[in-house]
Image 1 (cartoon, rainbow, N blue to C red):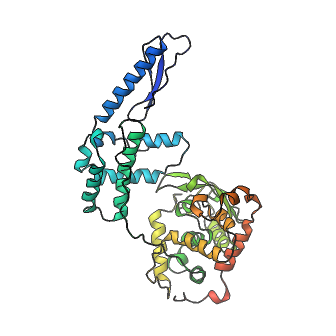
Image 2: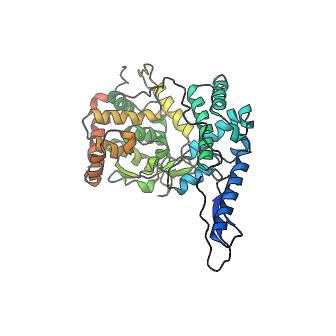
Length: 391
């Protein structure tokens, strides 16, 4: 175990040291010793005793501050280290702990006595209660996070969650739209698209820019140049109300295709009272379009599309991003250019080598080329004025 190094402040007779309590808060304490060797012994004694006290609490007691944004030790540590952690992930993990783990007998076990077998038994019990394997895996992952953080901080001697894997299950594959389907949906404007300029612009932007839903909801008028079509994507809603940086903390600039830019201009004309700092997709009170409202509009649009067939596909607003990615790559556009436009991380894209990513000058890439290609793929043509063609 690593112990804090005691130090003597200028003008003070005693040595002091810094330590973290079991909730992760950094505290300073005096050793009461004037000699360095005695101070080191006092630090070891104190830290060992602190670890014994922490191990004497139950899992429920130890996990009480976890996955609460303002008090979670893991959140605080990751933020201090400059690492990313999402508010949605934190909030959902806390909800899973409260719903499935805290009511279980597992939560009354002493932290120091939890074994890998206890965790496997918990998983077996929850497998009979939790609706699906994905939720079960996320629940166990939240427990493992608490245990691994406890081991990392030295509150327990080893991590009982190590080597406990996930339940295997067949992941549902997200469906995509064909370019013909997107082109005809945008031309026909079925259901909500033909009734509300705001929803028309929202769904058009989803298909034509590949923005994530959170990014689209956070888009403000001041971030868009309606003359050139250039837009800066630098903020995103992490959940219904929390505004933060975009995913992977990678802001980007895009060029909006001409047909989508026309619909944005129409929306701007219909909302003349909006200020530059206002959200593009906002209600009369200036509130951003809700997540459920956007999902419902998307679903109603597909239902209203004449002749459209799902063919067993799982189609959601995020399918628009997947569809644009697939169509651009299939059209022969540079993978690096697609990566830049859509805001992938290098880990997420898994297309470029480290050498390519390091030596390619992104400022030389022409984002207008992407917008032009999207215009070719999805823009309205004379042939795209009829009903939606069945697959």
